[in-house]
Image 1 (spheres, rainbow, N blue to C red):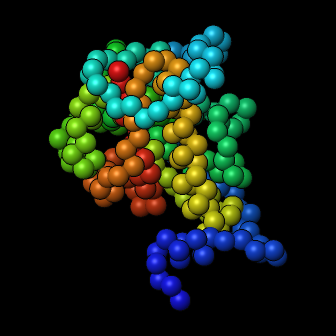
Image 2 (tube, helix red, strand yellow):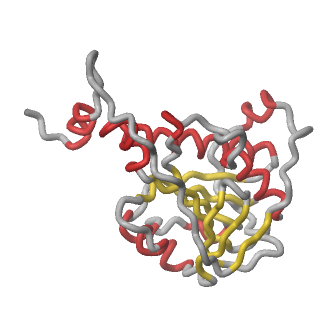
Length: 229
């Protein structure tokens, strides 16, 4: 049997007619009981903005170049697609498991202290987990990605496959990775509409990122998205 890890992953997560699924209840999203600080984001605008086809024609990965700040109103608009509404969120999730968490490395966000934050999707808040942002360590973790220094904020999307696995078995690992793509795509569209630069960094040292975020076992970094001007 071919032992190629990628092909093995594909084979182990296939479905066939007659296969049963666990059909369990997905574990709840992460809650931080005692963050250092909670930042209530402004209510996102639901009207106006650039025409969608014009936005899509301009959509492309663009690393931040200027290094200037972005506002809380802008980060609110960027995170709005990830927020909870009507019991779901702004992107599809197989079985409603929502196996993603989102963290922010804040360098230059107006009226917000630098540090590491967790995005609370239900309350649309930023929860400060650390007041320290070790930029040198993050740059090393992102394999010396120079444009990190010009990013006002970078988002770290993590996957908790156990949530999807409870519903779909091993196939849940596929869904966790797919949903990271859905979510990043929506934030990139929002950034383009706001005239901001967004650049996904998919290549990084996984254990370095896990250590910098103090992630528990079972939660894994999926992609980092740089945001700025």
